Image 1: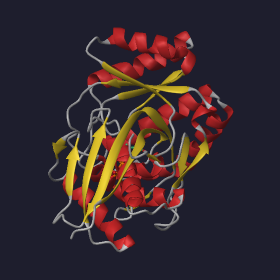
Image 2: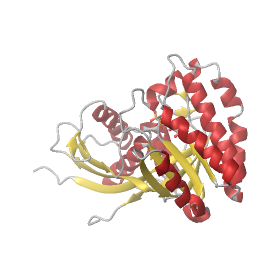
Image 3: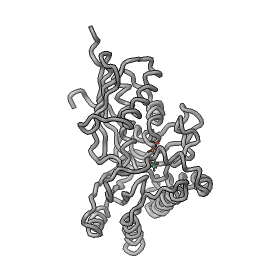
Image 4: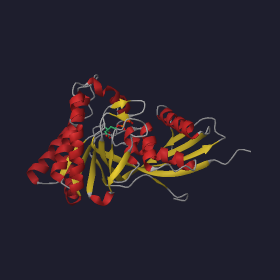
Length: 331
Ligand code: DP6
């Protein structure tokens, strides 16, 4: 008789990077070219159940209630292959995952997805790796997923090997009441995802110069977060995002993620900060959505102004969030 499946359910939050990860020193191991800093997003999360089942002949994946095919199925299967090899288990798995935010829009679904998947796959096997090991394992599925394992404000130092490339928390979520107001400019699926993008980063003549100055921005942003110094934080966060997009736009082939309305919002945000003293700055990932990072006291007015810029904008809002967690069986 077949053994009963072993299952576990986890939840991991998405994260927004303040100093970006763009380009790998080792694409297979996802060893990043530079250190990055992020904040977990409490209100954007992925919930994933993994059931290892000896009756299955292949892995099965459902995302938001629908059966998923390649390339998502292949990417998840590859990650499970790595975990099967590492933990010496040959069973296939039934994976069911749901997001409370739209996928493929530049809100990082791969970060929360691979953090939740990695933790659920381990928990279902009865394995509880140390946080740094879990973060490194999640990194193999998606680099930014390494940062969705620990809580709050997180740093990911590049490391030189699989074991030494992991993310860790340097301040809990309640350390600073920043709010991310995300202007969702488009729900269209991205044409070029991050994994392909990372591989072209070195084709931009600007990447080396971005990397030479990245450690300095990393130190300044971390110090600004620790001191809760919004002014210093805002200038560097915007510069870092602009630098990453300059690399993207000058790669071969070029990657243009901004839409006209993205630029309109970026200019408005700078104006609100400089002319009206609102504590808000912008940052964009590999997509057109604009993350407006603001001090909690200015969040309502920033949201109101964003809505009056364009009534077509969809808006999501989130404070800093905790780390990935195993949910109780009856969650
Ligand atoms: C622009 O982690 O999505 O969001 O490792 O290939 O899955 P893969 O890439 P991913 O890259 C994230 C890039 C970014 C910046 C960041 O989050 O640091």
